[in-house]
Image (cartoon, rainbow, N blue to C red; front, side, top):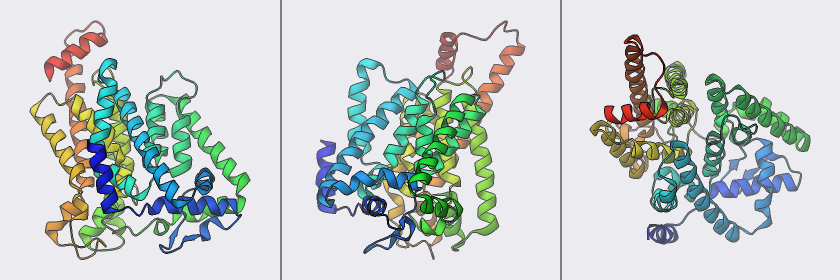
Length: 397
């Protein structure tokens, strides 16, 4: 029923799917041997912003007319949302297998209304595919020799998932981190061999020019840098923006790594580590459009399964309210300048929530590690078994 209503709303509301059109234009530039980064989408003046390897992956989009491609992209994103939900459940180990299919169906039907997911459909974006590549890697056993391939491919397409390779490295999964880096370099080499001029231009120039991606101060940009720009009413936050990103980036990666290395004292440690890594990347990236925040899917799944205390239920309700609110589209100053003080929070709603989650997870890690340390000093002869540890945490919560 939810998906039927979603289809009706999309039909009457309309969807530009402009990013899909940009991808198709990139694929056409590759096919016709045109200058990839000189291309501008007619009527929108939007440039190519992804690496040459990604543009090569967009070539199949040129095989279809725009109307057919719209339908295919919508159906593909719906399937990717279902896969992302399934992989999120695998990452957190919930629910039981016999209930998994029903839970995936329910969560997919409701998940289309989450603002990052809804906007991904509206623009015809690839974010759900990137999310699935990363989750596919993180849900595989560490001993799997191909673990890291998904993160490497995601990084070759969109760069920012590269922080997950750092997370793997700092949590002791060195082989997976190296596989991720090797996959990224191999994909880059393929792009360089096929499109040498475009590759040289991208890696030496266009990658370092955030203005090609968009205007930082726009309401659509829900990075920490964008929030600081709107708060100070400037186009470039300068040293203040850099300092804020540095502080939150350090906090975020520290919390993520500590979570990932705390399996003995924290349930679903790797899931929390992965989500905190994603939030850190979204916060410190110069531009994180609202549709980049599709990591709300595993975040909400985690909060649902761990909503045993009043405080955690409150965080779950707050998170759902934020991602269902579409709040940043309400303020009248979408271009980001001259935003009144009372519109600042609705217009920059994702960064405070992301920081709040990092702080809550960090505080929880501090408490659980301190309790574990006190127990060890009390005379534990050996670490508790996984079963005993889970039971202890259940009683504690």
